[in-house]
Length: 292
Image 1 (cartoon, helix red, strand yellow):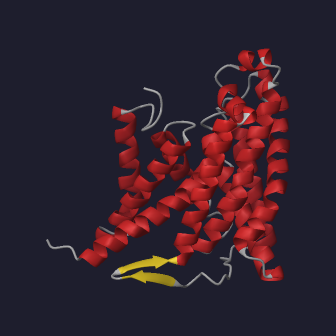
Image 2 (cartoon, rainbow, N blue to C red):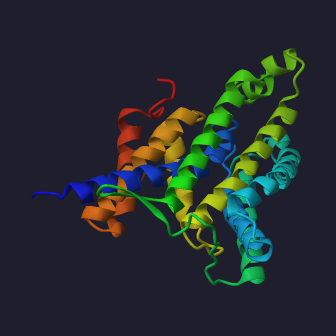
């Protein structure tokens, strides 16, 4: 069967751009789950919260969604620190950070969704921006700016966090805190404080991820559930705590979903994506870029 070049090329480009979105929404889980061993299944709810904040700022003040998300980032950071403090005092210090900790984050997920439904209803919301609805045409290849802009923001976000983690004391402490808390204490660093900062940073990324999501598509309060599996799958496939691995895994997942949707229909996309996850776990349990 001959496949037209323009169809193949557009599927590949769409997959790469979609992968950029997946990378942006996964980076927070790479910190909380990959580095801190905290299974924050409520992370997609914070992404949706970021989407609604971008929507409010856009519809009432006319702010660009990305700009609104950057302005809201400090508030999300403080929210993340507060949530970790409650989690630490209630569960982690008591050694109950297993099922009870998971139930804690499930409760946050449920409460956030209910609060958004009561406030905004179940109707889909969208934003307006000069680049939404415009495409760049490179021969037969179309580059929709509503996907290209989030892709570029994702590159900046992950590159900035990668440099922060590798070149600052706090960044290296965050990477080490789940592995050897005693070594951190010997370096006069408080593991609880480091984790609180790291979790705040994880939730702060959800503000930007939410803006990216509502640029790509309209949102409603429960849509975050669609991304829980994908986010954790990307985190595992890339190797826990590896930003580079998560980025490449997100690209691979985006390309697979795009090709599957284009040639076989969108209903097959999740099956192919999670099939790749199962193969990765079977032949490379530590992930593509994890420690062997």
